[in-house]
Amino acid sequence: MKIGIFTDAYEPHISGVTTSIKMLKTALEKMHHQVYIVTANLISNKFKYDEENKIIYLPGIKTGIYGTKLTGIYSNKAMKIIKDWNLDVIHSQTEFSIGYFSRIVAKKLNIPVVHTYHTLYEDYVHYITHGHFNNAAKKLAIKITKYYCEKHCDELIVPTEKIKELFINKYNIKKNINVIPTGIDIDKFSLNSKMKENITKIKAKYNLSDDDFLIGSVGRIAPEKSFDKLISTMTTLVKENKNIKLMLVGGGPDIDSLKELTKKLNLTNNVIFTDKVLYDQVPSYYNLFNVVASFSKTETQGLTIIEGLASSKPTLCINDESFKATIIPNYNGYLFNSDKEFIDDILKLLTNKKLYKEMSTNAKNSTYKYSKEVFASDILKVYHKAIEKKIED
Image 1 (cartoon, rainbow, N blue to C red):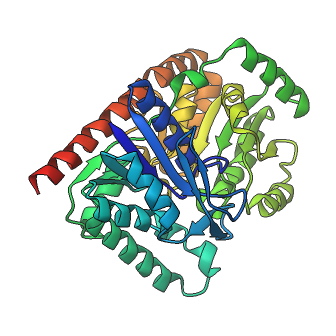
Image 2 (tube, helix red, strand yellow):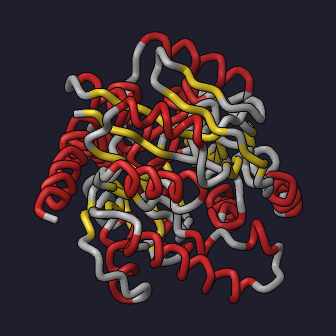
Image 3 (cartoon, rainbow, N blue to C red):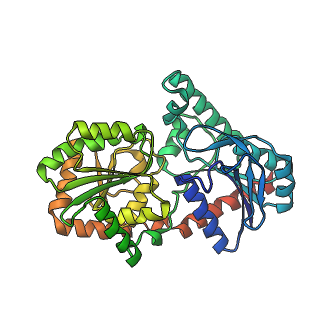
């Protein structure tokens, strides 16, 4: 099958969406499918066609949000190349510029479109409005999402039941919705000798000892992730055991304010900020942690949570619909409803070595359903549905 993936986010941009698409492309190609990419040129403002890797890069303007760009909704140069690709299906990964271009291509060339919804935009409009007209911006984000997901695709994919229920009950979307959790490359997160070397270096860099119990969180350091709440729990945890430490891995707009909060709470010896790290180093950080934690309620799925589990780490998440399919309480982690519950769960894992060992094993075992092979297989089924629907029409 010839598959065209249209996305605003792709290498060298670093994000969960980029990781997901790259992994899907690799898995599909291993299954002997041909995958073509249409994306934004983040390096320059020029059109580029990488024929060897089958990637079209479109020029665009910077959005001011994490290095992303918005392209035009049409390109004659790209259209000529795409026509020669003779695609069987288009897989759109964005509701904006390149997403609209995918729909124009699909209409002109009579190709079915599958769309994956990644981002709950109403939780992110503050990056554009800066606090002004937030309610109006949220309504607009919902309207754009509804219009695109209903009118611009033959089949719709979302990563969790939470998003499916939101689309049905709040957005009133009538389109058939396929729930497919985003997969990961599980093998990348298994501890190996190279990781052990990296972990030794990281421990030396941040002055960590074997006696430390490290709570870890990976991702964009931004307000919607609620890292302030996670940091605040450390005041109680450190009183219980001075060797409990928190490491936040990633960069983002909230780093300075969270460092100030850490200083204010006298936690500078127990809270570590790494800032941005290279993606290929991230599995080493997961394997350094004792547990993974998240207070975020804005996840569509929470890929970092699955990555933590794949690294054999018990994982603690706030009780939100996004995590209910992933976290099995008392098996691979905990879903907490309050700071006190979180603190109690951490202390249980710290003091009960047998429980910690069992939960670590269970964590790894619970991730095989998220393998890239299962993910690609499930996506292919939706491609076939879209193609069959197009033939019937």
